[in-house]
Amino acid sequence: MKPEHIEIQLVKNEENKRFELEVEGHIAFIDYKERDSKITLTHTEVPLELEGKGVGNAVVEKTLDYLEQNNYVLIPLCPFVFAYIKRHPEWKRIIDPDFKKMEI
Image (cartoon, rainbow, N blue to C red; front, side):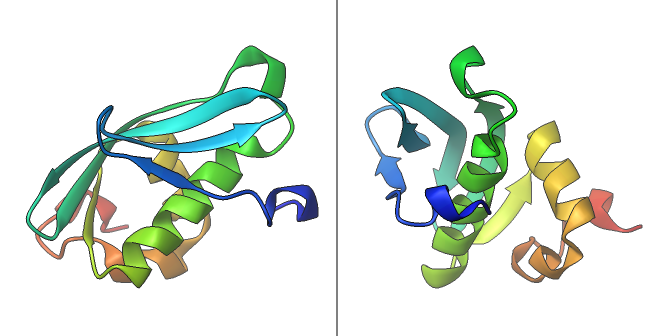
């Protein structure tokens, strides 16, 4: 994660069912569905104004950290999140063991 994103707080917007990161007045987010201690990440979106600045990776990393700290089990259906975890396989530790698509 880029140093300029470290101090930015991740928001779990429960009303809109998404994790949000506000950068330069714009919101990058990951949509989720939650059931008990499992969270399915379904879609990541970064505004055009923030593309290429590492904000997508920051919102994913902060979300994964939040999930781990709060003992959630992850189902990564979002292609961006899935690709991030393939590049950072240490995050497989929080994936639902029944989610077989992560077996590489």
